[in-house]
Image (cartoon, rainbow over the protein chains, first blue to last red):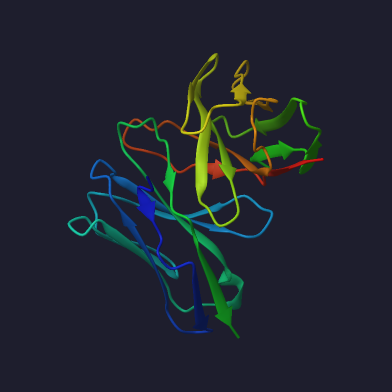
Length: 113
Length: 115
C-alpha cells in the first residue's frame, strides 16, 4: 500500500514561471517530509524538508508547504529554470520510525526554455 | 570531499549467482540504508542499520543480506534467492538526530542486470 503518493507523473512548465509539485500521504504518524531531486543514473539529491510543526519552509527558489489536515504537501519552484528539469520525489518519515523514508513514485518536471 | 560512494556503477549477474554491492560513506553518519528503485516506481527500503553490528529488514528484504562491521561500510549482497534482481540500487546514510529526523543523503547508485 502506497503511503506517499504523487499523482502527477509529469509536469511541463515554461522557464521563469512557477512549478508546483504535489504530494499526498495517508499515514497520520508521518511528521517529517522531504523533497528530493533526481537525474537519470544518479542518486537523489536532498532539496528541502519540513517538520509537522511548520506549515511552510523556504530555501531560495524552493518552498515547501504542508497542510496536515489534508495530508498534503507541495513544492513550489520560483522561477523555474531549465536546470530544474529532473524527477522530484516526495518522502515522509515518522519520528518514531527509525528515520525510515517512504517515497512517492516521483514527478518528472520539464522546464521549457 | 565528504560523501557516499557506491561501486560498481554497473553490475551483471548470472542466474544463480550471488553479487555484492559496495557502499562506503565518510560523513560519519550513524545510520545507513539500502533502497531499490524500479522503473516508474519510488524507492523501496531493503535493509537499514542504525549502529555497527546491527541492522533491520525493510519492506523488501527477501533475497538480500547485509552486514555492518564498520561504521563507514554497509555492503548489500543480492542472493540467488532474489528472483527479480534487475533494478537500480541506492545506498543512503544519515545522522540519527536527537531532536527529530534527519535527511538521508544518497550515493549515485548501482545498476544491476541479469545476464
